[in-house]
Length: 230
Image (cartoon, rainbow, N blue to C red; front, side):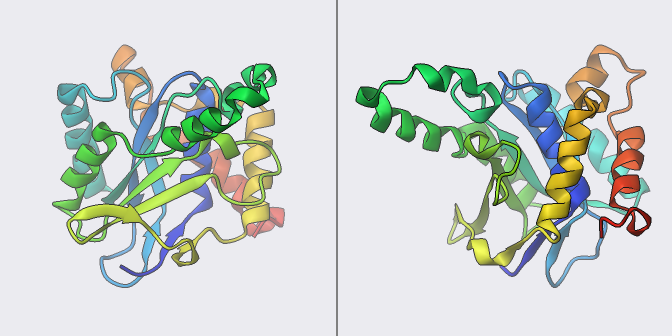
């Protein structure tokens, strides 16, 4: 599998989704508006759930609705993302102050586990792979979710030799990383994670827009060359 490019829009929404529910596991779908073939460009994402990630009926309902919407908007589902719940990651980092050196090794191992795919993540990614043979599985690394992070807090997997294997980080591109960080920090500082609607929230109140058109417009305004960010 070749290169994968992650847009600012997709990254910002994933980050806000994980930040909105710091004590919960969250997941979503990765979308592309480009045609199949060549480098995979992830242009957007749809935040799905922040509770009961392994509940099959809700997941299937979400997949079906997103698939229909993608067909209407000339997009396709090309991957899956997940951030595992972790009271010890940077989204809930106050607890790390109480760790003693005695437990450091075990704690570090625990952090690695929290950025690893769960059986639920692997199952959904496999389902997407059946329809998209260059699909990716992206895990958000909560340990690295903090302002000024020098590298994207993501771990990406690709389907290789009948299993999901870590993807070479040199084939993952997030252009204009510093500008993207700046945009995400602006959104977070303004409390714009509250604007994000995942499919879970939509099921609680169907008037809420799970396609997040309002938030998309705000992010794209910040990304606009007119604002000097690109």
